[in-house]
Structure formats: C-alpha cells, structure tokens
Image (cartoon, rainbow, N blue to C red):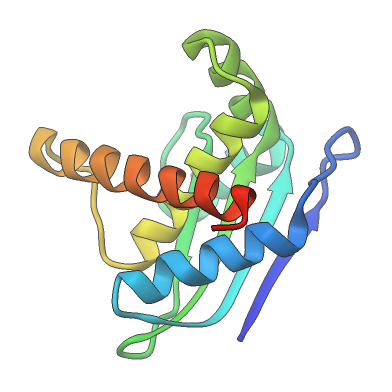
Length: 144
C-alpha cells in the first residue's frame, strides 16, 4: 500500500505526513476499499487549471481533481490539489489552511471511493462523510 504526498508548489509544505497517510488509509478501509496506490500532488492554481481544461474540459479553477484507476475494491488514483485554491477557500470559509487542506484531501479520496457531488443530495452526503473523516483525523492526532 502506497500513499504518496508530493509537494510541487514551492511555497507549500506538509506536516504530519505519517499521520496523514494513516488517516487516509483508515478512511479508505472504513469505506470497504483497499488503499493500493494513492498519489497526492499539491501544486499551483495554474497547473491544476491546465489539467482541468485538458483532461476534464472544464474551463475553471478548482481545488481538487481525482483520477480514478481503481480495480474493483482496490483503490488506485491520483489526486491533484491546488494549494492556491485551498488557501483562498480557507480564508473564505474562516478555517485554517490545514483544516481546509484535509477537507480537500478527503474529498478527493471519497471520489476514489465512488462518491459523487453532482446533485444537492450527493453534495450533502459527501459533506457529511467528509465531516466523519475529519473527526477521525482528530482522533488520530490525539492518539486514540
């Protein structure tokens, strides 16, 4: 099982890498999947925008893009995160950068686990599930 955290944005550094990987693994397992290979790439707005246009034909900035290569219950995927969008959204929502980054990370993972956020009902379920795993993060940080 490999979870890779790649920091491409020169002004961004990840803390607690070991615990983040544990958290992602436990979240995926809790969704009844096997985390085989998840690559997180933290990059700039411009890089994520170009990927969004090229691969998804979306002409807008976004905070996260998930590419799903799953094989049955085995999770394989790339999750591209815009550090710039996360920073702006943290300010907009009045939360810390770290909190917003964790929410975006788990959001990307939930897409790999089959969650969608196309409809209002799906967005509510996604948010509820994100909150559940953000609580798991808190427990991991407390050593529970």
